[in-house]
Image (cartoon, rainbow over all chains, first blue to last red; front, side, top):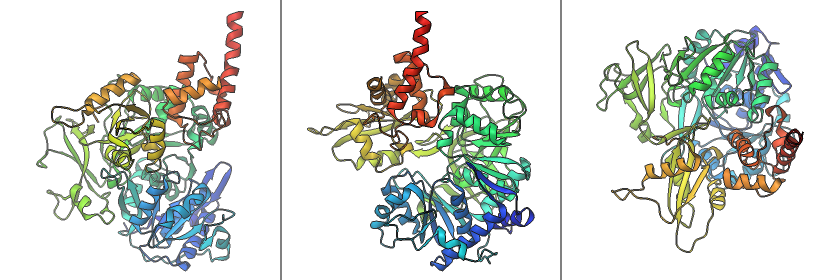
Length: 532
Length: 83
């Protein structure tokens, strides 16, 4: 693979300069404009001091400028690090410090908090302001208004496909987010498979629902733009109300929808899809967690003209590693949907504790090898070595231990059966319960605290629950506690259910009795306790 | 109605809201998960069914606007009962 991601987009700018590249809430940008704008931004980054291999933090809401910022970063031979502007300042600070960002590109609401985020950094990054009207206190090295004066023609790249395209932070069980390194080759390999298998074409109108901090967003951006199709980013506000979201899909005449299943489940529950709705739609894809079968059946019956495909894969193996296109509507609501078979160039294996293959139908742990494997975690050889191993079958290659329990059936189809650890999925976010507990440890006045996940029968995956006890004489209600931890962890990690106890229940070994707590939370919500 | 909805946020949804004017999106009190539970609670505790077609972003932005929506949804039902 001898291509860089930005070259796949520039090729379309030459072939179809005036075709729409991105359409978002009445705004649109064509391929030529997107190419020119990102060339200008790359020059601005280089002039301000960015060098090959530097990291550029993208602290921007999902928008046309954010995608231009991503491409501009790649064109400056740098790696981008997307960050959630609604994340607490303390967490943003940790991520910027960890990746040693040379620059932060920002706009919008995040700006107000930027001085606080950067204040304690030993080597603060310079700031590029990507919106109109730079606010006071930002002290940007350059701004949006400086870009038009810069040359917009092509730039020479020094990066190779083995260089980093981005670093994606995921939840870490020790309380510190882990930065997964992803190369240009990792993504372009997947994009080749994806655009070929799904037959992306110019003229396709493709959703961009996952947040930019999810690696799933890179499938939307690069597969869509490299195929000359049009990307329709979907902002959080656009997907809040299921009826409005259905209106949007209908009016934009999207040809492909791709999101985490919780959103699809949400739309099914509100029954906002009409029979034979979305006539332009060809494909509906999901990834990140299992699609509840009753909701899947609902969707498939409503949209018989659409192809439904389940994608599976952790960030460490780049976007998705396996796929399963539904051959028919599931026969029963209890039928387990397979994760399917490996995408071309990827390799799935179910191994036992000694890393030997298990028999057909036996449950073991899922390992992934092949072209999607990340080089590892950013500046963390220890964590990297704990999950990336030499491949016993292919000398010189590696395999990645996913932490997912899996089996293979006689037809070679893979199935996932939960986790080996306490990682959970909530609304598509991958969350280590340990990271949440660490945040509580930082709150004074708590004696004990346990965070567990409960399946309450909701549509957004597991519900995060916190049980706690207080030191003598301390008064702290769940509301105060909630606001303290919200300063440390992102909102999708903040527990939704709370229980204050005189003391947490213990098991025979003197450890916190988590199954007991799950049962208590389950009773509060009338749901089903999960095994997480 | 405002008081009852504030109580639902605090007691049922574990998302305390400080005032009827608080912007629920900005404060993070309302996301799609909470919205579903809120609509279920309005049905179960208050007997109010808000038609999904009536929802837009601004109608659920504050507790006050949700209360207006809920009151509007109660009226026709009451007339039907009376009639």
